[in-house]
Amino acid sequence: MAGILILAHGSRQKETEKTLKVLVNKVQNLTGAANIETAFLQFSDNSLPAGLDRLANKGCSKIHIIPYFLFDGVHIREDIPAELAKYKAEHPEIELYLDETLGADDRLAAILAERVQAALQ
Image 1: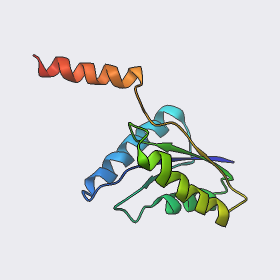
Image 2: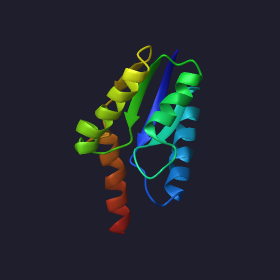
Image 3: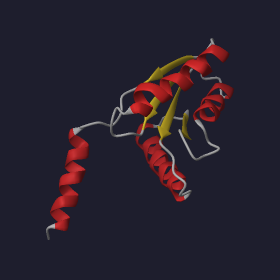
């Protein structure tokens, strides 16, 4: 069974965790996907390994980690792969896939353009 882990950076401001949960609930409503969890790279007990464990405990043996990050910075290129390698060494039965960041997606450009137009009103 497959699972999805939405991974955000994390913040000392705990309300950001609520914001991600609201967003993920919207994604679940749009997709009908049941096995979606959230996790944070930093500043949270809801860590990357904890999120992976929750999905593994649900019976997910194939997990896609979707980073809720805009850019391919050091976290995406180094930190997250290192954590995933460590988790994989401890759980060789689970397939882990690190998917792409949000990047320069046209849909994000449309949202940004909408905000720019609103600011210029």
